[in-house]
Amino acid sequence: MTDAPAVLGIETSCDETAVAVVRGYRVLSNVLASQVDAHARFGGVVPEVAARAHVEAIRALTHRALAEAGMHQMDLDAIAATRGPGLAGALMVGFSYGKALAWALDTPFLGIDHMEGHLFAPRLDDPEYGPPAIVLLASGGHSQIVHLKDWGEYETLGSTIDDAAGEAFDKLARFLGLGYPGGPAIDRESEGGDPDAVRFPRALPDRPFDFSFSGLKTSVVTYVRKHHAAGTLPPIPDLAASIQEAIADVLVAKTFNAVEETGVRALAGGGGVLANRRLRARLAEEADRRGVALHLPSVAMCTDNGAMVAAAGVYRLGLGERTAPSADIDSSLRLG
Ligand code: KG4
Ligand code: ZN
Image 1: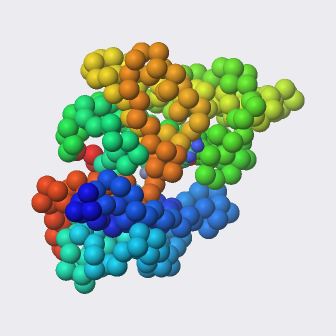
Image 2: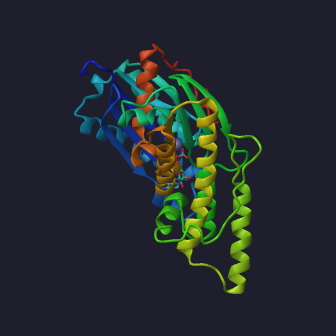
Image 3: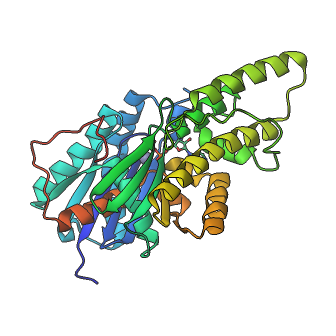
């Protein structure tokens, strides 16, 4: 196993600077510099602030990832960095740093699709995970259901027709004054709340695997304004739990539509929203009830991290792929 290639993975597509060393699909180190404090006072991610914070953190973090893995940079078999999708300025930092380091070390460089990274994350925790599987990917910028037909062969069965699930969490948390990032805030506030306190609408567009979350947003805003004015607003934990339930319901329903329709008996997930405790519990319940194998990565592997980028790098390296030094980031890269 020590012969498996060691890949350094760099992730800077949004608001976390993350670096990891993975050998084969085993995580040797996985370190992260969160920018939450830098963005919190703005109530959301400020692209320029994100890019600058990546510049400040990337070098020391890379050294830490190598030290924690007990490795010297000369021992790396490849360097992988997120190429897109994400914020252009933020992507450019990790991608350029990775390319320069690879060039200096004369080692292969691989530009990685961030969403392919999320697809590979469950593989780091769970050797049983692999194709064929249905994978629910839900993050701040993307929500999609993917049919993992084979490694490298991804069919997007459905996606959001408006806001991503994470975006819905973030916008509604901000509206309720719960701060940024919104998903973890709603998850936390929901504890002890009644998920049936308010029945917010579940938009289920005609297309069986597509989501929509903008109607939920409008409905929550209307509800809160009306009941606040009347002095009949339920406590925040009840509101948070009811919002969380509505989002989870839609994601679970659409995901299992895909499981049933394709007949694929394995389900996985990735992206920050899959860190949500209620969503994880609902997916587990439903998978259990239907006899579907569930492969959910640990919470740390759901949110953005360097290990998932390195894992996709291990796979791409194995195919003999190399990203040319002239390659650029692609902020609107699409899976497949
Ligand atoms: O995958 P990710 O870390 O970054 C992107 O690629 O966007 O996902 C971030 C998103 C944010 O919208 C955040 O609010 C959401 O994931 N998120 C959560 C939770 N943790 C992070 N949403 C719901 N519950 C959580 N516990
Ligand atoms: Zn992500």
